[in-house]
Length: 324
Image (cartoon, rainbow, N blue to C red; front, side):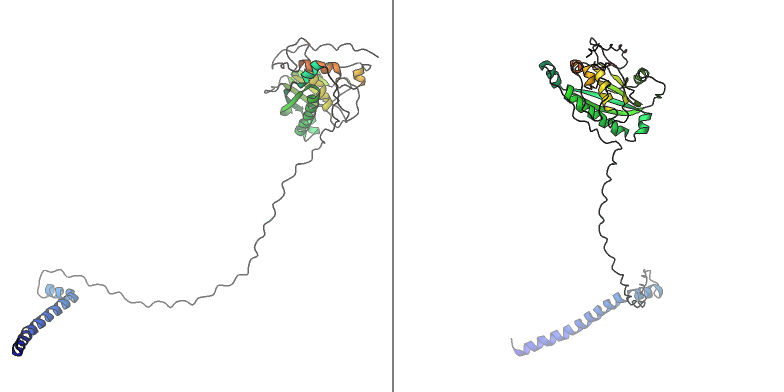
């Protein structure tokens, strides 16, 4: 292609392209202005030309407000350092109050040797459930009356385990609301029978009434032919003793197993201070029971106790005692 032809083509493009560019520029500028001023144009068409067009609402221009100047930071006052609390030692648990009465301090019971048949009886373990009721006079004397009953029964159980193979299990301790004034031991025993045993084998009424040298209380004493052991007993106190009810408790419980009183001061068992006698003993003397009464208890240790409401059997008469 020669040079002249190229010039002709260039002139033709310039001639045609320039008007097209101008027209496109005007069109584009009109579109831009129309979009930017759409509201004004539509308002002109609606208000002046009367055309049915919808005029958009004018956008609200937010009013610039001056932001408040930030407040100068006020330094917080420095609080004085609070000392860290030191852990306080935990208070020691309160110690139990010392009982008013010291625990029993009797010497160990004196245990005599036995024949083989009776030794086998001792080896047979037996548990007796004991419930104790305490009269108001004894409660007034001892603020620790419940602990006192527990200690006394525990001491008696230790003696019975060694002498008979019998363990006394204290199952209940309660108040005995009885007016003892003017009542004999047999009347107190009748009153005690009106109280429930609540599953206990025996019910003991413990009173502040003092041992008078001939009566330590009263208990149901079965005859040798009876099918049941006794179940109720009244226990008096030994004035001035460190263990005021221990010896009398041993005495009355032995009655429930058939043991008999030793009433003759000339009897060797009396002179040796068997607890079935009323012989005076040194305070804290080792408790001991004579061979005859020990045999009676061992022979009946495995018998059941009288049921509640059973008729009271007459107490057996004391056996004659040989004199020296």
